[in-house]
Image (cartoon, one colour):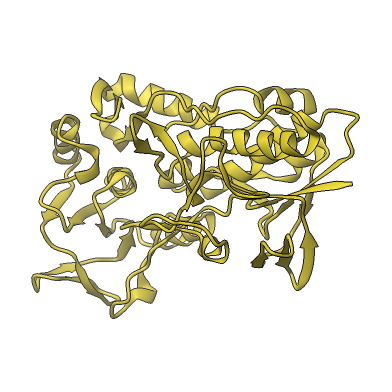
Amino acid sequence: MSHIVIVGGGFAGVWSAAAAARVRGDGAALRITVVTPDEDLVLRPRLHRLDPQASRVPLRRVLAPVGVEHLRAKVTEIDPERSRVVAGGRAVGYDRLVLASGSRLVRPGLPGAERLFDVDTAEGTARLAARLAGLGRFTAVVVGAGFTGLEVATELAGRGDVVLVERAGVVGPELGPEPRPAIESALAELGVKVRLGVGLSAVDDREAVLTDGGRVPADVVVWTAGVRASALTAQIPAARDELGRLEVDRRLRVSGNVFAAGDVAAAEADAGRRVLQCCQHAIPMGKVAGHNAAADLLGLPLTDFAPDPYVTCLDLGAAGAVTTTGWDRRIRLTGVEAKEVKDRILGLIHPPVDDAKLILEAAGTPGTGVR
């Protein structure tokens, strides 16, 4: 019996598995296994709201109904020459591999780095939430004014005093100029203090030390500055980009019997641009990679990755949100209306559970995640 192994239990991994199961149908002799040590799919776009339990979906409720096995183990080795992975100390052979092991926060090597908090994982978010719960009114320093940093800072502003630190000379440097006035207005409305052109140089239990020598009293320091693809990509002999992502073709094939999806894949989106490490791209990439891995084994047509037009929806806490369209990020909505869109999106990214028919139907439709 042919075997598809999917490494990773995030958006890309789960939807790869469901899409492969959809192609398999009822009669094909095709085994599908998701390998991840995690018990849950974590809805990472929800983590900035600091309710990690509401961001967890048990994998068994998505995988088991569609006949996908779940091996709870960490993959430590990928051996493309022998077509196997090593997980939990045992070798698992594959006929097709989908690498969907996601990304990791790049943590800094600075004095006191072990004191930093993050919202990169459900566990990290739970640690931050527990710390804040015991403080009452607090002062938080959020490092990085990119997408995640802005969402965390504006969420925390409803609960304490927040200082947002950014090395660049503007907030949201990668978000472009058009949404910036709306973002700056929201930060001012919420009382978030912004320090631009500086970074973090050290942390202790009372303050954050900045690169310009400034010291900011802080009960917590939250690090949000940058992510890289899973280190497993280095075990596959293929070209990688500056984020460590594997170069893939339009069918998300790396080479031979290896496909990649989500934050580990440098796929082309449109107009010569590559996908971002976000659920808007991870969900449809997972569906395409899983479909193609199964179709390749069953002698069926493969499909090209063709994502929906790029959009963003940035949560700005009590100040609402801002939604944009296109790579130039033209503003579509702001304030309460945009917040309603964000809330709908955070509902839509939750996969169907327990119902094989609904899960398989969803696996054949375009992704609805937006980031």
